[in-house]
Image 1 (tube, rainbow, N blue to C red):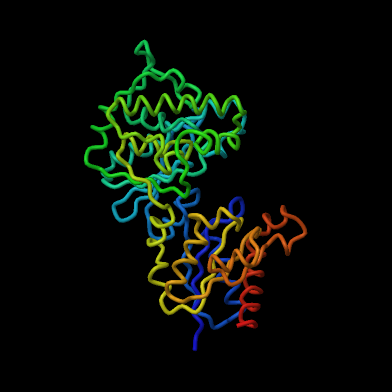
Image 2: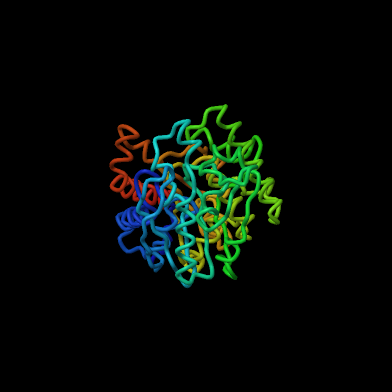
Length: 376
């Protein structure tokens, strides 16, 4: 009887896209079991790399130039699939566009994200999914809304500049033009985090330091986001400060939830059905998932845990392969993962593992499958 294997990895950040990782793992499965029937279903959790997965699922790429996080023009794109426009915030204001520092942490903005959303709306999209991971900004989505026509004003009625550092001057916001531009279109925010906008678990405190923010910057950004949230509420929006997920993407989720009536949803759940995983699992003999780092974060909203939950519903065993594995066997078993393998354990250095990720992933996937077959 032919062994049927579903391969459903996320990206290996800095090394392979989810599509490339799926191809490498699939090749490894065939090396181990030449007659295996392999179904490739690369997945994403709503963070960086989501658009690559959507392209593989049949989406159409739309390219344009927009303002980057520090005002320079960058080449960005979004994907249209089945009438829905998928906009990835990081394509316009990703942290890879900056050398993180105190200056960039305060200056980075999401204006380019608004340009992407506006282009999709002007092109006729009535449904938009906004993915919000990997941004350089902590501006609460204020730049995005300004690009869509919002007037963000200080106490004298003068326009407030872009960037999270400018939010300390916000006194009011007029969303009339934004609502007119949005019309009857619906917006969903795909995120894999549940952080609120403000406070010790908020956008500035949790994500600011990795964007270059000093402790003083974190306080300044959090204070500015508080003023921004209050101004949005006075403009007639829902109160977003404490909503789960509002802090995602430096608070761009909060801006979307307030002014675009967006709702936050699991990025994994939004994307996974488009990849065919749901149809592929019934009757499969094995599922292999993975990502760059399999750790505690992987168990809360990330793709490997989501795949394991779905596989368990169909009684299909799950193996995982990652760049590094920071979970012991007990934690993995608890998550429904029967076996794992880490590339760094079979490479002379982390740099080598990243540089040679494709052949390493192929070889170690084959070994993982052989090991599982020998023990099953």
